[in-house]
Amino acid sequence: MNDFRQQALDYHASPTPGKIGLAITTPTQTSLDLSLAYSPGVAEPCIEIAKDPEAVYRYTGKGNTVAVISNGTAVLGLGNIGPMASKPVMEGKALLFKRFANIDAFDIEVTHSTVDEFIDTVANISDSFGGINLEDIKAPECFVIEKVLAERCQVPVFHDDQHGTAIVTAAALLNALEIQGKDLAHAKIVCLGAGAAAIACMTLLIKCGAQRKNIYMLDTKGVLHSQRHDLNEYKQQFANDTDLRSLADAMHDADVFIGVSGPNLLSPELLTTMADNPIVFACSNPTPEIAPALAHRVRSDLIMATGRSDYPNQVNNVLCFPFIFRGALDVRASTINDEMKIAAVKAISDIAKQAVPDHVLTASGATSLCFGKDYIIPKPMDPRLCEQVSIAVAEAAIASGVARLPVHLTC
Image (cartoon, rainbow, N blue to C red):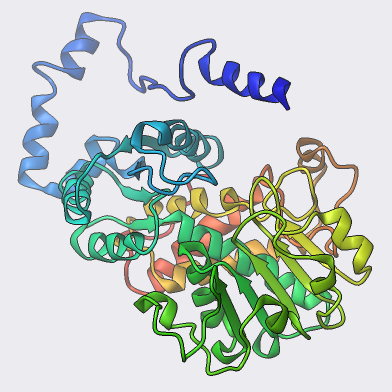
């Protein structure tokens, strides 16, 4: 572990500090090049944009840029560590945008005193970018921030910790249910955790066909139920009229367990009480709610997923957010709506059922991958994600009336 820690520190420090930089995209070798790039030539596109604001997409990089913005209040499993301590994560997000979808991303860390101040800061700079990716903002403030910014900004706003997690979780769960011979509409789902990711995951699953009455969400005080008077408006949406109170109560005959909580919170004993052919998504990172090896020893009929890359079935946001934005940017969508999210769910789900090309096996370090219990979701290195998810999102944007351009695939 100490070796890995040093490797991580060295990776971020060398050969130059950080993980991202700028690249020049036009010639700069001659005096004429420089006079076109800046004074006096730069005045010409300025004049055109002043006449037609949409011309900014023709003469600048706005249409292929995303701002990755955080206040550092909910960073990974580290909690509220502040804006500057979140910067390596935001740079990493920018790296992933470029690596997987060729989107230029800029990390912006905001120090603020109030939610309104944060909202004003982001809204006031939003027109500089093609889209806004909110990141690592704690609940419940993140719900208000995203809602208000989506209303105020003219470009798509997307809180990846909510919706990226939800999209990938839904795609993986639909496939796991199919393999286990179960149906989302009738599945009993236990969700351990009631923060931004949990609420977004359950909300999207309902839009995909799950029944709210079959979802049992738990926070640190137990099951969210209708007799509790300590729930905020977001948790109240999942307060069931039920006598179940504890995780042990909820897990009896559950078809699905989704953990977005903390390490080692699901005991082997509780796993034994689940229904036949259970599905467990233990997504606490880096330590899952239950270790995969332990879970498989307890239940041989299990499908298991985690948030880690060293186990099968990694539920990883990188399968989603670069391609959601790629599709949205390519058709100049004004927002990222439910239709686009559900299109992404279906596209990611479908890729896992397709034959896996040899170059994906090589990049993933696998000898074979076939749709089944140990392969319910694509690998991050699969280029078909950009091809298929982006086009599905773009087409959904057009069909739902939020696109300004026809589909053209940039991947």
